[in-house]
Image (cartoon, rainbow, N blue to C red; front, side, top):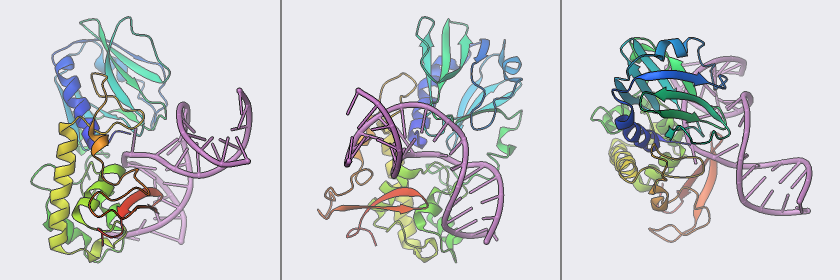
Length: 271
DNA sequence: ATCGCCTCCTGCGCGC
DNA sequence: TGCGCGCAGGAGGCGA
């Protein structure tokens, strides 16, 4: 599934195709995503002009004058620009027909994604109003992690993946940034020092920044807005490398479950 | 408040 | 080939 770099790559790639375009129709074939797509969605959008495509965490915010829709790609979702003669694929759940004869097309095999109306003040929507800072902005600090984690017994990996702590750090980049910072993913969040949180914050920013620059990690379902794969996967140091040698110290990469999710780390480099 | 677990769903790779 | 199983990028919601 898309993590933040994939969502940001999608946003950036689609933006130029969408801004200023008028929406001729919205065709919904399957409304049962994580939550039902509201019945009124076509009437909100038809005839309106797209004014912005923004991002908050892994949510895309598609705006028209009258309000904003939230789009989430879940584990397997993707958005792309299609031409009129492009064949419909399995799991293409909705299309927006634009005024230049192209479509914005949403595909999501697992249907964990979302397409919801959030009105004129989307940031006060229930799904957005408690989110932590954006990882690439200055509000994401070691001080914040340190303060919020005191007394907490939760594994630092889960703490880092909690969207109230910081948005956009998913399962791949949590393992990658903890590896780079030399922190064991199972260490209690409350027992990580300020100094080590400083290193973690730097590495989260580095790994997400680098991934966005190279167009995200392509695993199975992800394609960016123009339909081409990302290249960050080749740069992953621990994720999916169980049993292979740590690139820093040559000891074998370990895989454990933390909170039902696979977690990858080097037992020698990470403490 | 905090934490861990469950859930939604399809597709794929593996072992037999 | 076919079948059953486990696993997959998220994250809200719930019960303890």
